[in-house]
Length: 127
Image (cartoon, rainbow, N blue to C red; front, side, top):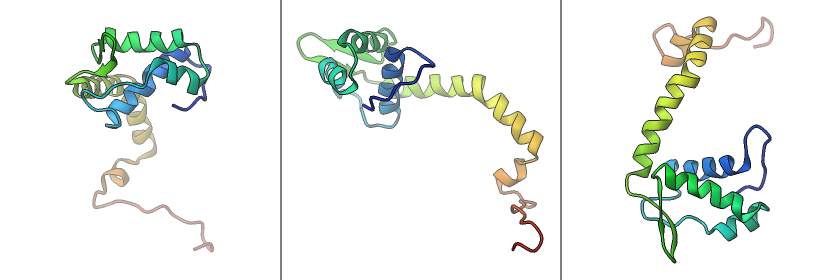
């Protein structure tokens, strides 16, 4: 995992989000083990308790299961649950602003490849 952190949210949340992205991108599949807490902590230069907190959040969300003495594993159906949740989140949080921008700039036909799809114009004498 990339040890670069941003200040917009807690590190444990960023670790959780990176694991979620790995599941969504199928880098971690159902039944796959998560990287060990110690390895992630060492590679990311964070406290193991921070990684454990991130992993516990994934357990609480029923995306990951603990197997005593073995570690943490991606639960069956985790990717489908994540896809549903991330789609709802996108449509509720991001899409309204994106849609408004598309409408404001008149990009709908360009993006959908409609019959009137326009090409970006070049200034006169430059093309």
